[in-house]
Length: 281
Ligand SMILES: CCCCCCCCCCC/C=C/C(=O)SCCNC(=O)CCNC(=O)[C@H](O)C(C)(C)COP(=O)(O)OP(=O)(O)OC[C@H]1O[C@@H](n2cnc3c(N)ncnc32)[C@H](O)[C@@H]1OP(=O)(O)O
Ligand SMILES: NC(=O)C1=CN([C@@H]2O[C@H](COP(=O)(O)OP(=O)(O)OC[C@H]3O[C@@H](n4cnc5c(N)ncnc54)[C@H](OP(=O)(O)O)[C@@H]3O)[C@@H](O)[C@H]2O)C=CC1
Image 1: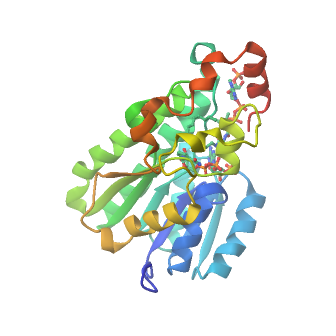
Image 2 (image 1 turned 45 degrees about the vertical axis):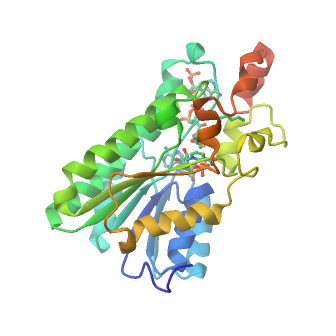
């Protein structure tokens, strides 16, 4: 689909790149010749993915055990990255989410999601942007949001609110940082099976995927489909795209908007919500 070496000369940090979609984004860009940096909280997961990235063809791989809720830890990570050479791109992918009745959320529960998705993305974006601006270097920030950023989504309110904030950040910085040749873009995935999303958003633990029935294309997304989209947006071929959010969901958002996938939750019993909470993560 792409010419060989499309991403040669690029160096991209993928937050949460050790697993899930982030791992797929990192692998695809490694195949296309990019140097890769990944971060996450679980060292063992990062170690294993680093080996896969080298096998996929990344000229170099660096890993950082870093919780993106911690601004100081992020700054340390960016200093260490820059010491070896600047990034050309950042992918804000790491996220946390779970289904719950909003009126029952504790402040800690709200913060658990907001601090990863909104604060973490903003901390990483400014850490990269300020270094690019100081160094007079161009850069690209791609943030992974969801259609909830525009449509909202019941029972995942902290995530929807945080993703809306990240989308607003993307559009705002496309203007503010455009003169520095820094592009900011977003993708809004539909349903792509991953351990994290399935573990946290299928609270009954069911193996069935009724959500697929709410996708006009009648199937879930394949990781290769979104990884190719992300590779394109991170490449110079997309050099005139900024401030844009590309939805990749098989038409799901147009069918159900913020309502798709959640109807069953209106009839959840207290016992089912309790199971959902226990089964988290
Ligand atoms: C099946 C139908 C689906 C319909 C919806 C479809 C939507 C599709 C589009 C979705 C868009 C976004 C998708 C994603 O983001 S997928 C990524 C999901 N991945 C993850 O969540 C992985 C990372 N997750 C985590 O790290 C954790 O889950 C968490 C976010 C909770 C953070 O972990 P942390 O260790 O910091 O937090 P704690 O476990 O200490 O908990 C902190 C407080 O939060 C409360 N909590 C946790 N889980 C729940 C829950 N399920 N219900 C209510 N409250 C919860 C916990 O009790 C703590 O608060 P308190 O101390 O006050 O009790
Ligand atoms: N999968 C889907 O269907 C959809 C996904 N999305 C979005 O796509 C992105 C990827 O989702 P997905 O792959 O499913 O999620 P996963 O939960 O599978 O992966 C999340 C990754 O983020 C890392 N992470 C989580 N919290 C932190 C933190 N505090 N600091 C550093 N890293 C962290 C995790 O690693 P560790 O636990 O080791 O820290 C993990 O590698 C997210 O932004 C999500 O909101 C949007 C819509 C649908």
